Image (cartoon, rainbow, N blue to C red; front, side):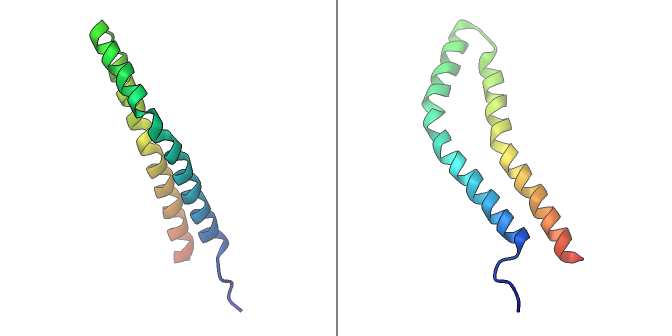
Length: 79
């Protein structure tokens, strides 16, 4: 008899839901980041550029992780 949920697909779904749950709380920080960036620009500090790079890093990390896991699952199902 075939299993309803394969272990690899279960872990992929779990990781996706876990990453989605983490990002829901992160949306509350946007006004604070904007205020910090605006105040550092007025002072002439380069912290706003570093803050922008940090936000982009945090934005792309889950997509890269999901892509790697998806690729490994795809390769495992090809065999």
